[in-house]
Image (cartoon, rainbow, N blue to C red; front, side, top):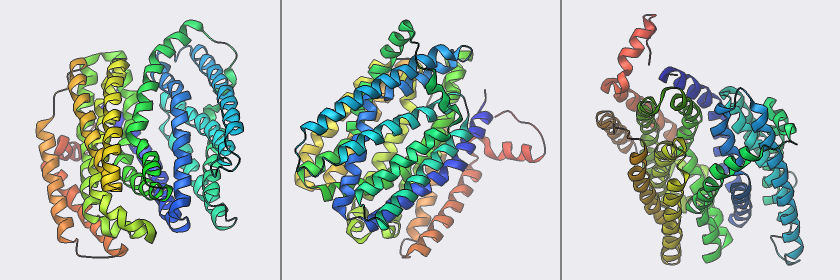
Length: 481
């Protein structure tokens, strides 16, 4: 396993999934124009509820599959049958709880008709996510990225048709997500593993629960860290404000963490195999390179979103645009901190199977986030929520660095990080010089010129020895990366 394999997989994930990310951006831009803030709030809150219950009931299955499949790759039936049977059992439980909740909900509640739709969306979304996780565990990046692209594109097309043609509003947008998730599961070549259910290995199930349940608790608090603000805003202000904040946060979060997430899709399975086959020292060396690459991706996007917000959010509907510009710089920094922690420092806890330490960090950070939100949202509105996200993200990052270094000592790449900061500074100066240009055509020019300058700075500063490696490859020599 080498950096070259990591880059090959990352390029596949990036090349295919960048389409999915663009579809997501288009979805937010169109929905903020077609839906009122209140309708968008209904859509965003139901989807957040699906994510919440997926975290509570299904997340542990995917975590176990991704972490344990390399250990069972020579005898996968034992692992897959246990997890498939657990998935069906959990789904039956979810269906019964959802039916009970529907029966107990007030008949006149505006949320009541969303319950059956939410249960179906939860089932198909969770099934699709497990199939995608299976593709990752088998190191099939192309299959993963194609399925994810189909899912997002189907959700947009079906949702748009139902919103525009059927006037279904938030229900139409949610139906698009359901159909996209269902199609992903049906198309997956690896989706047949779900039919291996029927035989459970009790010792494996016990081990899976001991590994996965602490991660579930951590993920629940991670949900509070990343998603609770929209529920708090709906409660403390109104549903329309929750819709505005959700659109802005999701757009910026996708902008800032999409590339880091795709990079992690390629890197984490490889790091796991390096750890299992070559030991801690080799894994630590690989993670040092990973951090440099994550910062190369994340820092310029953070600066770009902050400086170009007036032009970027011309894509949004008029009812969403003003708050988007005001919140952008704060949310950009907050989501950067989230991405670096999640896709670098938190991996140490998964690699060492120290999920309790990870859980402690997430719980403490979530409590900080919720506490600050209750304090600041009534006083500062949506800006208070953005600031609480930033402070809680910084708190979580510091905790992850401090405790993670005690498990695996990863030397900090000071020299390479310094070069990235210089390159990002040059990128920012160029954008600042062009910031007076207005409109979407100006935005394209600003991004293109800034990107060329940033790439030139990376080349000039020779980050990770990129000049020599590329020059040798151009000469036809094989150079281990």
